[in-house]
Structure formats: C-alpha cells, structure tokens
Image 1 (tube, rainbow, N blue to C red):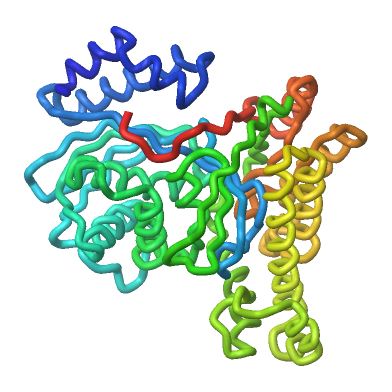
Image 2: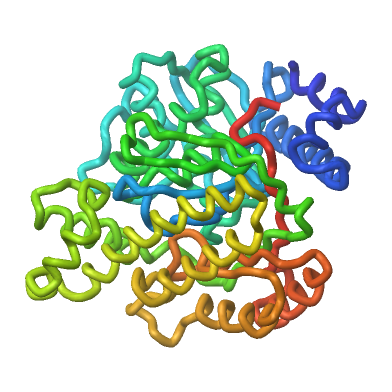
Length: 426
C-alpha cells in the first residue's frame, strides 16, 4: 500500500483482527496507535509516496536450556508480545537505510559492504550487511529498501533485541524480494551467520529461532543445520500464570567476553577429547577425566560442561511435563535450571564488577516473594546482567510487580504474553 493507504487502513481498524491474534484483544488499541506512529515517522523520513508494508518480529524468552544451544544442546523457548515493528518500502538504489527509533540511521551499500570488517565493531550496520551476505550466500534475491523500526524489545534486557533486529532484516528481504518464501527457520540461521561472522559475537541459534518461529518451541540442535523444532501446545495464561521478566537495569553491552567464555570453555572440554562440541560426548567420559581437565582447563570449564549435560536432561523432562500439562514438574525444572546456572554455569554476575549483582538481588527477592507458592524463577537469557524470569500466579502478579518495581525502578517488571507467531508481515 501507499503510505497514505496504510494509514487509512489502520485508522479504519482493518488490521485489528490481526493485532488481536498477535498481541491479545486487550492490546489492540495500543498497537494500532503504535503502528500509526511508525507509519507517520516513516513518512516524515522517507516520504509519503512509497509502496510500503508493516512487519513484526517477536522478542523471545528462553524457558529452559540455559547456554546449551551453542554446544548443539536442547532448549525450550517462546516468542513474547514485546517486539520490533517496521514500516519498510523497497528502493532501486541497492542501498538499505534503517532508521531505528532512538538510534542513528544505518545506511548500507549492499554492493560495497559484502564481507566482514577485519575487526568487527559490534554495530548494527554489520548485522544488516551480514543478513544481505547470508541471503546471497544461499542464493536468495536481495535489494535495497528503506525502513523505520521501533522496538520495545529493550537492548540489554535479555529478550534478544539483536536477534529480533536480524530476523527483521531477513523478514523484510524475504517479503520484498523473495515473495515471502524464505521460511523463518532459514531466516534464523542466516541471522546467526550475520551475528557470528559480521558482528563478531559467537552466539548460538536459539535466540534467532525463538524470535522467528513463534509460540512455545522445543529445539534440539544436535544437527544445527537442521534443528528439530517442536511446537509445544501449552497455554501458560490458561494455566493461571503470567511470565514476568524483571529488568534489573544492567546492560549487556560490555559483556561480550563473558558471553564468549561460556561456549569457549565448553568447547575446550570437548576439544580435549577430539570433539567439536559437548553434544558429541557423554557425561561419564567427562567425569572420568576431571583430574586432567582441572589441571588443563580449570574448574569452571568442568562445571560448565556438567551444567550442559544436566540441562539437556532437564529440557527432556520439561518437554514431557508440558505435553502432560504437569505444571509442577515443569516448574521444578525451572528452579533446578536456575540453581545450576547460578552455581555451575556461573552467569548471574560478571567478575568484572562484583559490586553490581542485580540479577542475584532479583532472584533473592523472587525467592522471598514466591516462597511456598506454586511458582518458579531463574536467570533469564545470557545472564551476567539484565533480567530474570518468573512464572507468577495471576493472583500474585500485582504484588510481585510492585515489589520488583520498588527495588529496580518503575516499569522494570514486565508482565508478558506468549504470542503465537514470530516473524511476520502484518
């Protein structure tokens, strides 16, 4: 549609049914206003006389399987109703322009920025260039476009702002230049390529898949080129719980080394046995070699490896619990996963700044607030800073939110809905 037609359609409530499906009926009015504001912002920057469309990519919450995907492990994750939205229109300049609200415009010549910088700078233009390169590598069509994006998937909040952004670039390229035929799993794989090769962050594939695919998904990365993705038919809200994410205010921006150390140490243990990743080993082999591994790699690497094996077992048990609707068994796994992440994976705070332990504090408060209730809580996402997650009984949500906001600031506790779709053209 022309920009003016998009605006008229929004005002005429033509997208309301779609918004209700994605965001929930209670959020339709707010989302309509949000998309209208984005259309106005696009028009101001790129002009009214453009053929444009609306896009959305979900943020994600990792429900189980903390730091296992990069070693070809198993996870359970979900798309959430915090998302990045875009208004995008093709151009014939072989240039991609992306103006994200609150950030400087990225301008990429797709015929010039075709290979990674010698030293990645960690800038969003590298993610865009990496997505274009990935599409080309796989034989998909590419071209220029102009886009305005706005996001409530807050940077550093542990709900995968970078993965959602990468998936959004792929989502637009798929629909504008490939008739929407690049499926969301393929977009997720190309997003990982962009982040690994162009952005310089050795992430796994979970974030990109969870943001792109939608709903609750169990993912087995034994073959990362063809991950087994299983939709889990379980409604957290219908079971009487809200998924709450508490943003403690810590930022992920300066923690690349901390994140990188986790897969690096796990892979170092695997390499000791001539393997690429821990998934190619069994736990008994690692335990038998502990004396040698301690001397060669240190205790933390061994602890992280043992966390990996235990976490894979938990994912299997939690998948079965979700299939049976056994919320107690699922919550037991959440608590055990959080304890293992804190004690053995050691990703709840960074050793670079021992005085800042917002995640530890949030977990302690959750323990106090929810003790004795049927509930669960654990570190969320990559860890080291950012957020915790908690499954809170609906009747307790307001008290939980109030206590967390009092500790960390107004609006820090986000009460979320798991949405049924990931990367979509509205």
